[in-house]
Image 1 (tube, helix red, strand yellow):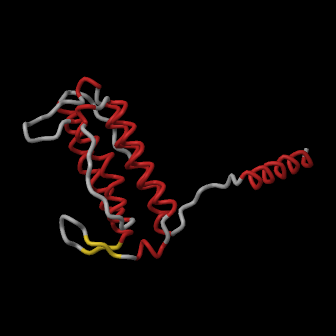
Image 2 (cartoon, rainbow, N blue to C red; image 1 turned 120 degrees about the vertical axis):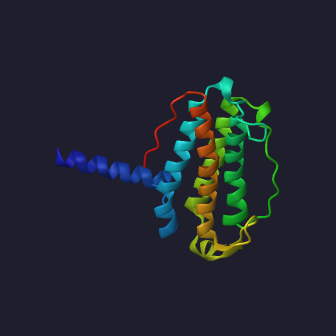
Image 3 (cartoon, rainbow, N blue to C red; image 1 turned 45 degrees about the vertical axis):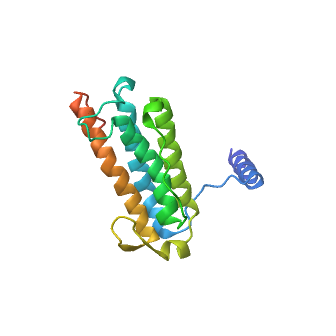
Length: 179
């Protein structure tokens, strides 16, 4: 039995080595810590998006408020945009998709793509880049690019909380927040 276990272990080790199948790990201590925080927040946002019925994606509590769909599109689109701008230091200009022309499924896909982009940056960014500083567009505050990850998440949380309230305003039980 022991020889069979060793043979299986050796086979698996060789298979993973040959095909480069190693567990992906973020490059820095900060991003290793932050990854699960981001993934939990992103998954909760997707739960909120899934909880609202298709028919209520156009719900708008006041004339000046975004619709539920617009809140979700804003989150998905800006997750990538803010990461590019503040974490990666790229020059980007907003070009937000029109939520009114999108289905619930398309909006959820946009959210997933935005969150996947941020997740990939969390895995790939190096410490030198995280140590750089950037100026936050709205506030003028100077922060590290590592700190900018918190801004991206805070922005998502702000709009997710609004969307969560829209769900409650329609007498729907929102997903339970867990941490």
